Length: 170
Image (cartoon, rainbow, N blue to C red; front, top):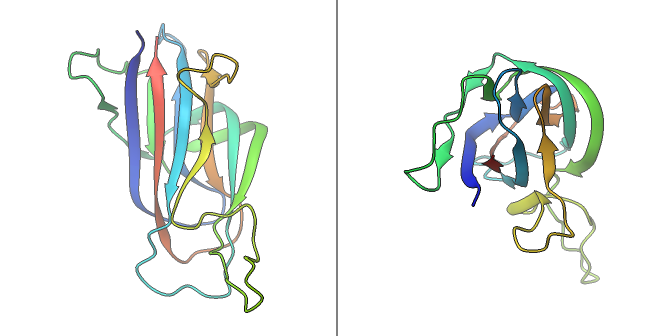
């Protein structure tokens, strides 16, 4: 069985092109990382109006620096994550490919009884999810020299959110 870990970036502020949370599997790790979940908790503590942040899940070809996030082991007997694997918020990165876009806009209930947004982050949202059981749903696989970031791509410098990445290390 694969070893499962979670990294968490709590109260991360939205800033232009900021890596809200990311993981990079550096050369020499000897590991394969599989991303099963990327989650956001839209926990604004103050009113934020007239602002819409676009979050992008991106594959990256480099990743370094930032604020290191210690991976939490789901089993205390799991091995430590090698130092070549960078888990961080605000990491420097080189984009390689876009996976998906999301908006952090809150849903607005109209008087007609419909919700005005479809793909948004209401309160707690899985931005990426692959199944542990359904082998037909493939996780994001990171070999050495590959990574994934969740990036705020808009010039929005208000508000905060919590972000999580759940992954296996083989």
